[in-house]
Length: 268
Ligand SMILES: [Zn+2]
Image 1 (tube, rainbow, N blue to C red):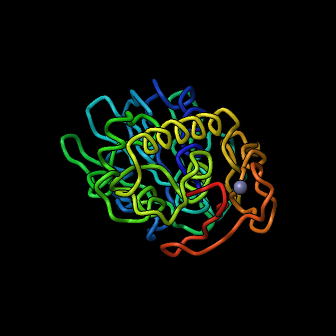
Image 2: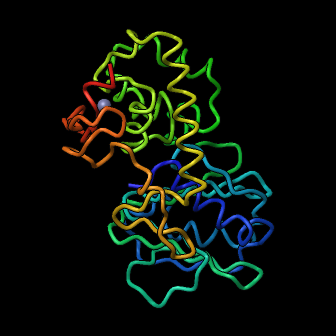
């Protein structure tokens, strides 16, 4: 499941191709649950739109058009948003031909990805419920949003209305790096520890973006290359392996329905 770093890598790679171009032509597959806005409306509203920015909030990419409307894209589990020419393929749901002649294709084998056209002046319930973005949130806002919660800290980090963009991998990695056990209620963590968590999370997200994101399942960067950050994971997916700090066996448990990796000695 792509998290913030993987989505940001996609955004940065598409930006030079997409921004500054007008959408010349729109092709869509047949209607399906992939389309929050129907193919018919997309074909009516998108042609002629000049893209002025490609933005990201949490795990969503938003193409912003000059009139103020936006196209929201969510990669879901297996979505690939790419500027590469793709061979004809039954898993491509949306293809935009730009005024430069280049194409943006949205391919998704499992169709958990989503596209939605958001008219100028309106919003989307999916965006309205999101908390501040995990990469840009400042330390004061971060601690203020977590310190009153009775939720387990990991569950709070994964709650997109508290903080947008963090998923299972980066929650486990950031909690390990800051020495906080994932089950600990957020409100019992000191302000200093929450500030440490903020800074470790920022460091890890930034390093992952620089490394091209983590490759798991079907995530590919838009140029088709694999991300390399999975080689830097300290605890995620390493149940039973030695803790990189103390050498004891890493633990695994299911917390809030999510697979959770930690060291019971180093994280308190
Ligand atoms: Zn340890």
